[in-house]
Length: 416
Ligand code: HAM
Image 1 (spheres, rainbow, N blue to C red):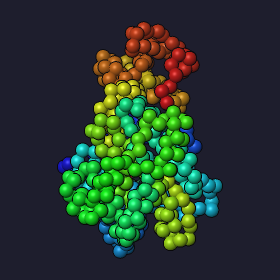
Image 2 (cartoon, protein in one colour):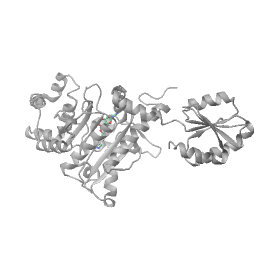
Image 3 (tube, rainbow, N blue to C red):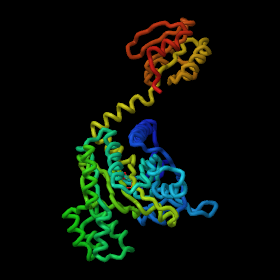
Image 4 (cartoon, protein in one colour):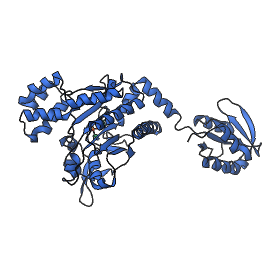
């Protein structure tokens, strides 16, 4: 049997890569003072139908449970965040700076860079209207990408301002009920044939194409670019008014991260959503917010495609599953003594393995090498001494069993 379309099996090597990605995400988010949180994988379908917009709803995995509740696997974290913040708002000092790493599910056509499950890092700031927060969030997104070894030659953050488009729609007297559909058409225009976009936009086609060609400006975008220049990160950003974002709730600055060569889909996306918490709580709690999410699928593809980033990953991953010590039981009579010492080494944090059933000594050494052990400890005729063999240098020495732990501790730190 195969996994379902768009779902992945994570073999040990894939898990090692996943752990590497998660570790970098956590490390950089914490550097910016973000704290970790999480929500449930299942939510009431209504949480998404209420505000995320038609794109996400078409992509929901949803069903009726045994209690007749219409529920959905989470396609994104933002509505959950809005729900949780509205419920616990008084318990926390503002602004909240929260990050989360979790799995999300979208019923989309599986293709390169798009699967039916993926992991995301979400970073959100709640309770801050200042544009400096948008700048800090964008700087965080850039620093995460730098953390994987990408430079400004590899990646770019394209930033835009939704306000620019809503001002335009207002000036064109377009009723608000049509905004979301038009914004989504503009968002997709780069990936769709011009005629298709023109047909969908009708009378608005000419002015929209004109604005996209000219490139828009906004005071906020200029202030943002300045803030990033002060940090020396402006090389990573470009203003691109064509970025609108498919999700309905964005209200201000929006951005997406891409590979410079334009080979892959977006690595990350986000922006300001000042009304969502108010709308989902039916006005009970009004808090401005902004955030972004970075997915593991496109990021993984880009790491593999970028030599510097790939080398950093391979280096980090190579040592992850290696053991430190392998116990060779040369005489079965020594098994009980060996087990007693294995327990002590494990208590001290060493990664240590041994043959579960009797095996030839040569075979045991082979296993030690295959598992990546640095040292083999041989329990045999030498007892109460143990033969310590460095598998890299082939050096051997005899160490009294009661001094073994101290001796190894002096020369070989644990991997964990
Ligand atoms: P999003 O643009 O829908 O934003 O997703 C963010 C990132 O998740 C994308 O750039 C992409 O890398 C990855 N991603 C999304 N869908 C898939 C998929 N089907 N397969 C693989 N990767 C995928 C959001 O989800 C917003 N909630 C982000 C946000 C947080 N806005 C504010 N706070």
